[in-house]
Length: 209
Image (cartoon, rainbow, N blue to C red; front, side, top):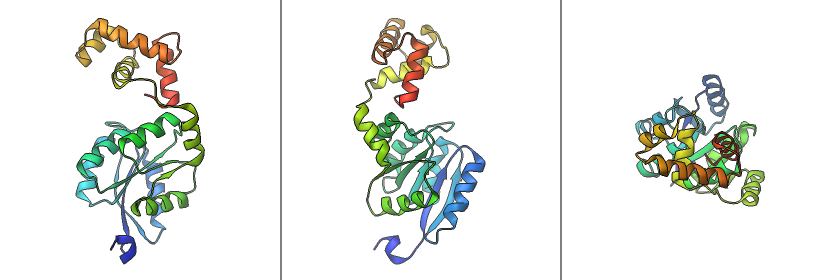
């Protein structure tokens, strides 16, 4: 018998780097009689440890956090805590983020401007084995198509985001400078950008990076 059926509260973790937002969300979810926020973290690399330590059933993750993104944390949870359901709740309602979140094993994807009641219902639904996706975002993701960047192109473009030169990127990713140039050239071409800076901006806006 599931915890929903036997009356026990759903054990939830909130991962959000903005403290005021996290605490407000915890307070709103706390008003739901069947949800118990048992852990809160402000970094993505703290998610797995907190989930395991607190027997969390549903992890609600922001995407952009220090240490590790919510999407990366979701992928780690799939490996280390596969029974824990994952809800991505983000300000960044981008089709590319939705695709990456689903590929990482997330069970739900919501934008933060939705009412708290929708998040609470999503938590209940994923625990019942359902998938919950913002319908407008799902339609946009289908219309836009798949992320054109390969994993390695994303790595190199991401490493270039802080203005690093090719030699530094090559050293960081254990590649040759020629290989870095090739990956950057492909990324610029696929994003239809004029240069690497614009490629980074476009990839981020679409949620590809």
